[in-house]
Length: 171
Image 1 (cartoon, rainbow, N blue to C red):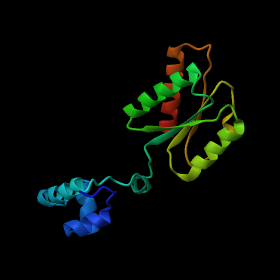
Image 2: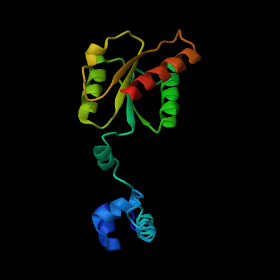
Image 3: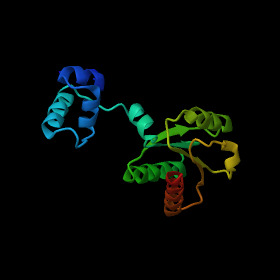
């Protein structure tokens, strides 16, 4: 069994089918016979094939990832927010990429800038300060500012977090 990642091109070679046929089989396209799909999927499983998320994201123009930037994960209100954001995002088929700004506006802005590379579908910036969206001008994806502080109840933090997530998902 091969331990390193195998590509569609390598699966094509191993199976004797074209790259296009392998791709269609792995994506359950009905134009590929059931027998061919099963053969290719068996080889893919044998060689531990894992789809390249970056390639899928390029094709679909959707990454399935949302970045969350918090000032300090050790502060309860931020960890509650992050926890609720993650479970909520997962229920929509998204994953969370988590960053800490350590209360630095510069680090926060650097995170937003570095994430402008198309690797995410949106950003939620969690902060105890009220900020304006104009600080994060970006047309590539939605950016939501989530104001959370220790005076809020867990239920209120959860509600605000969920609303922010929905706003990002709406685009």
